[in-house]
Every structure is written in structure tokens, then in C-alpha cells.
Length: 426
DNA sequence: GGGTGCCTAGGACATTATAC
DNA sequence: GTATAATGTCCTAGGCACCC
Image (cartoon, rainbow, N blue to C red; front, side, top):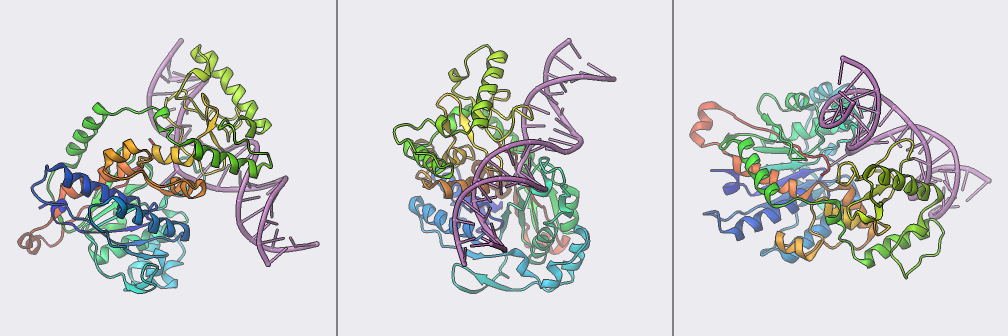
């Protein structure tokens, strides 16, 4: 039987502000309401490791939001802090490359308890989950990081501990979300010899797991899903501009405060908030757009400019690809050219697949995601995975793999599959 | 085959704001 | 007055698609 029929407990490290668990809740509700399955899907969040205290607060808030629309009450998982605290200080601070660190962790003690922020006590971390869905740090794997060192970089210890914990617990299915350039051979080395790895690119994507059977062709199922979705849905940047005038005013007011300008409550237009460099950049991009496409920039409802780069250095805009540029970690703003309004964090969350409007929420069986506070919404947008991709990947993993039968396990020992990652911004 | 443009889940560093 | 945090500006470099 596939994990979709049997799996219940989900864990995560570097939670992406609870994206995987949110995806699980939406997936469970959607599948059960569809009436397509002869059984009831029942998923449960067991534990998360989240280093960032602000993200831990977001986990609590998102969990409450899930319970506001779910048919049943989801129990708050154990929320622990730093995953590295699973091993002694000597093991988590070892020097050298990834494989050396993995060797050190391999011989280290793994603690069975860690401080839990949910229960305000030391709770067990020894109980095995059925599925782990983690968004491990990707900065060292990204093309945009010139000095990237991949898995030998500054997060090597985190990867080593993460893999070792799952190997010891024999977590059946381990899903890893990351950038397309992650060196999969090194991930496989971390999990060998017990796991098998499958990598998928879902615009965001790969996947994996343990002690289980491969039931259906992962890639064939994925292809069918992609075809089905792309035949029915095709969005443009304008579709993600979902923020309300109130949300735009909050963003403008915050910008005015930072730049010591008077906030104009009569308009959501952000032109007066731009500094000299940004206004010049808009004019330069306008001229470029007019020359290329022979039409006025303001006539294009899908045109978005990124204001953080100098024109002479790089044009980061939606014009060539008709898709939103990759969101950046610096403070540069995105400007919707037609309305001259800033892209709000709510718009970014919509682009990341979160249900921000009544329409999308109804389709997903939820209520609109509450994210009025620009700071909180920005925090979410900066840390979350693509929600729809996460749900599809989770469904693939749960449907295509299943627990091995007892008799077969005795005969062959151990089979496993491993990770997936997904991502690249849409 | 060579040139050009697009793209990247990012980072360094100087300046300015805020806390103590 | 000093330490620290936040903000703003500028930039890496290589793969890939496209065009000539």
C-alpha cells in the first residue's frame, strides 16, 4: 500500500515557515473531498526543527490558520530549535568538507530529547516520522552566489546531521527541497548505502525516501500531473497582483517612514516614494520597453520592474520572459509599471502559491491566508517554499512509494528511496 | 561557431538609524 | 559617544537560448 494510504506522521527541518505541513493539510482535504480514493487520507505533523524564532512564531500562526478551515483539529507538532543540537558540540563544529563532517557525525551520539517550544519542556525526538519534508539551506547551491561552495559550504554540518538523524531513525521517505544545482551525488553519499534517490524538477523540484517499495513510476505520474495542470492553468504576472488598497497603503506608509517622507493616504501610487536613482531607472526601462515592443509600458498589465539594480548593470524585469523576476534577498522593491504600485508581500505570497484571495482559497478548500502585516508577510515570502509545488511533490512521494511488506523486508533487508527537492521560482 | 542577452531561493560593503 | 542593526547600492560569473 502506498504511503498515501498508510503514512501519518510528517517531520521537517528548516520548515520554510510550515510550507510542507500546510501543503499536507491542503492535500489531505482536497483528496478526501474529491471522493476519488477508496480510503481516507490522514496526515499529521509530528515535529519541526526551526532555528529562526520569528519563523517559529509563523509556524504557530499558520497552524492556527489551518485549524480555522480544516474539517478536523490538527494537533500542534513538537517545535524544536537548532537541528545541530541533536549532536554534541564537538560533532556539530567539526572542520573539513561535507564527507569528513558526515564521518564525524556518524560516530557521534544523537540525543533523544531536545527543548520543545510547543510544550516548554524537553520532548522526545526519537520517534520516527513516516515522511520528512525539509527545505535545507540553499544559499551555497545557488547560481546567484558567486562564491558558493555547495555542500562543503557553511551549512555542511546541518546537512550531515540531518542525514545522519534520518539514517538512524530509518525514516521511510525523505523529501529535500533545494535549488536545481544541488550536487545530488553528495546527497546520495550522505544517505548511502540504505537510500535510493530520485530527483525531479517541478519548476521547483526533486524527491526521496527509505525502507519502502517503489510502486509507480514517479516521472510518469509527474508528467501526467504537469500536463493536466498546464492544460488548464497559465498565469501571467498580473494574476498575482492580489493585494488590497489597504495592504498597499501599509507598504507605502512603511516606505515613507523609512525615507522620511509624508505618506499620501489618497493614493496607492508609489512614484513619490521613489528616490532619484529609482525614478531614473523607471524612465530608462520605459525607453527600453518602448523601443523593443513598440508600445507604451503603462499599457502592459503584466509589466513589473525590479528597482534594486542599476540599468547599466542589469535589467531585472518581467518584459522578456513575461514572468516575475526571481525575488531577491536585498531590499530592492518591485514596481508594477501600469499602476505604479509596489508589489506587496501578499502579491509575492500569491506568486508562491499561497491562497491570498477568496477565489484561490475556495479552490484550495481553505480560507484566504491572513497576511496584512507587511513585515510578517515579507518574512513568510522570504522563507516559504512554493506551496503548490510542495503539495504536488508530497502527493507524488506518498502515492508512488509504500511501506515494504514484512516478508519482503526480512528477505531483502532494506530498501529505500530518497529525496527530492524542488525549486526555482516560478 | 561566435556574439549577445537573460537569468540566478546571493553577497559585500558603505552609509544611516537606533539602542544603550 | 559608541556599538549594533537596518538600509541602500552595486556587483559575480557561468550556463543556456537565441540569433546571425
